[in-house]
Length: 300
Image (cartoon, rainbow, N blue to C red):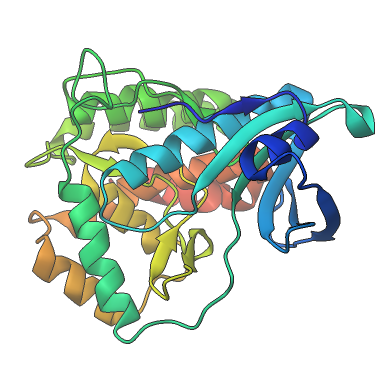
C-alpha cells in the first residue's frame, strides 16, 4: 500500500493538491466525532473537502486512519472517501490534519442494505497478501480503536491473535475494576478460549469498528466505510460488532449470510468478539460497561 502523502502545512497541501492559485475560502464545523474536530473546507475554486484535525502530537491517529482506508480501498469491494493527504500545520498552536473527499449526503440507492452486505462480504473475501508480514492475522502497523492503541502483531493463529492482541491487553488495562475472584475467572476464560473460538476458513480484512456510525451513504448512493480500525482476522468479528450497538436491518444479515455463510456456533462466539469492544469502552468511559463484561465472562 502507498502511504498517504504528507504535508507540512494545510496551505501547502491545498496548493499541491488543487493548484497554486487555489486557497481556502471558508471552514464549517461538522459534528459527529468525539475524538477529533471535523470541518468542511470550501476552496476558492468552488470545491469542498473534508478535514479532521487534532493536536500535532496525534498525527498517528491520521496516518493510521489513512492506512486503514487505503487497505479497504485496495479490495475494490466497497467505497471509502478518497484520501487526499495527512500533515501538520504550525497554526493555532500546531495541529495535525487528515484531508479526505467530501461526502455530499446523497440519498441511498435501492436495496441499500442488501448491496452493502454483498460488498462487505466481498471485502471479507478479498486477498489479504501484503497486509500482514510474517503471519496471517494482524496488520503491518498498529492503529487505534477509538482513541486507544490497537495491537496488530502478526500471528499465524486467529485464536491466539484474538487472545493476545485483543482481549489480554484490554483486561490488563481494566484490572482495577475487578476483584480477585473476577481475575481468576478471567484467567480461566482466557486459558480456555480455544474451546469457544474457531479458526476461520480464510483470513479477512476487517473494518474493525463496524457499527452504524461508521457506515455512511457515499457519493454514489451506496454504503461506504469510514473511521476504520483495520486488521486481518475472522470476518465474523466484524459481523458481531454490527450487532453490539443496535444492529443493522434484518435484510442486511440475511443478504450477508447468503453471500458468506457463517460457521456454526457464531451466536456463542459473538459475545466473545464483542467483549473486546465492551472492554475498550470500559477503559475509555468507565464502569458503566463493567456489568456486561462480567456477564459475558461468567456465562462462558
